[in-house]
Image (cartoon, rainbow, N blue to C red; front, side, top):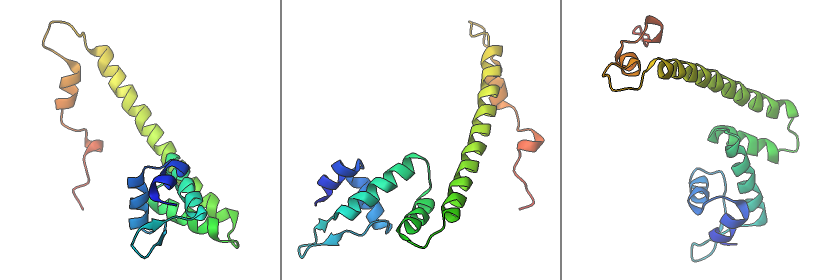
Length: 139
């Protein structure tokens, strides 16, 4: 199969497939003239990668999940550990986004949005960071 056919069947853009090849996630065969020749196995792996990436797994997590998928002697505990780590990261991001939303909602509510120039949104953005928001200068 050529890259166009694989793109359609896997649901991934050809550019993404080329990138995955460049970083070693998939290794299609090459014909004598240098054209990629994808196998059914490659289509399956690319669909697997597409689904994993859609769930937000990092490239490195995808690499590890693919290795585990292909390992008949894997333990589900290894897979679960990767998924739990990713789930914890999602929870951290949700907490961060919830806090960001609450702050922005408070600022939007405080802004009159009228003809006057004073604006609590701009005042907050211009304020120096709080002590807890500053990066650690100790290195």
